[in-house]
Figure 1 (cartoon, rainbow, N blue to C red):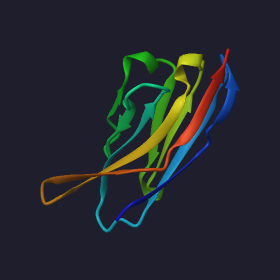
Figure 2 (figure 1 turned 45 degrees about the vertical axis):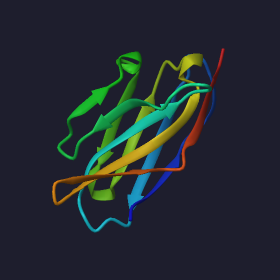
Figure 3 (figure 1 turned 90 degrees about the vertical axis):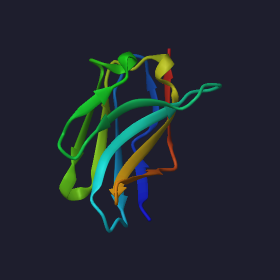
Length: 119
């Protein structure tokens, strides 16, 4: 079982910045991908950014150039630096970690952290 603890959400004005952190613990296996998803009011959960253990990254088009995902493998921690925030970035942000065990993917989720961007 993997536990994910997120921190760093809050209220910020448009154009501002926030940094989210997510620490993973409890895994007996190496964590492959870690990432951030978000779910805005009345919307489905969507991928924001993901990073593999090798450092490869992928971003949603809506956040490219504004958000940066990074990872500290030694600490099993993933970060999301969010700059130039917009009101449409308002959502609950969820951390995710994926393990591969015997070719099967196991995905774990954090409890979510609220990000609110005021106009």
